[in-house]
Length: 392
Image (cartoon, rainbow, N blue to C red; front, side):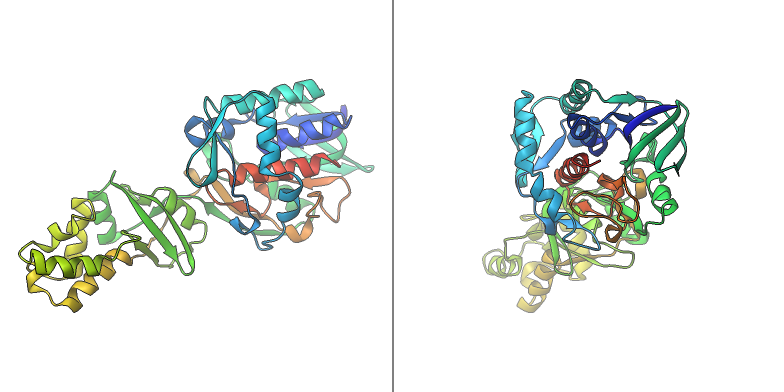
């Protein structure tokens, strides 16, 4: 039996960061993970360059049943704190759109920074280690694993969620929460492409690979970024963002020409060049395939000159409020995150400790806190890992 002060389950972003912080306080820490290498999600993120945080971190950009739960950790360990850490490690980075920060080089630099910091702090890292059981005994936590039995005063669950199962994602963290009597908020895929069926799917398949700028809305929530047509439906940043808010049966409204007045432009063009076809008129604002689809969906026939101003106003409205109803999503297979998780009512927002069990912590994606696309979820991993690492 190996004895430690802190056992951390999961060598992802949150788990490694927590391990570093706890070990720097003089705690004896071991990190256990089933994977053959640490930080695999970090390695593949951001196209291999790791979108490690965002300059526009705000609590309202995190989804949770308690929207203010993340506030404490995010304030106590901010994006600027992590940026300073990256700078000290000599990792060069750049800002892309909407405050997103990426490594100039490889995401492996972030993984290396974390593993080097763990080693320097004396953290034991046990990879390719399967967890069999976790229990409490005589005031300690006991973990039975394929690498032997480990015991500790504190147990940090940083197992992540169900997203990307091909990388070994599992529901272990949720099962442990239930085992210790903590509530769960329903889990579902987040930041995931949306799928369609029937005629809508056929139409989208004809445009597969086409990318356009668009504003995608659901109720009062809107995201304006790229939209990508796929063989299954819709993807791209704007769709991934709205997917976290979408529920089965919800209709999305897509503005394919945000910032323009398409109706007014069509009416003006009718006077100047009325013989142009509706498809060609729309093709001045949209890719040809998409212009053809919307012209057909409008039900209008003839040229611009054949249409009343009222009908052209309706056509403009279709372009700027195109209604589509997904039938589902691509699921955890391609989801970047898992929505829902360990109910925040059971956790202390300052420390991520379970209120009912001394020494038990849940951090990162396993918790019911999910950020927007663009570095928000990594910042939650750093902030929640830091918070738990100060006291575990």
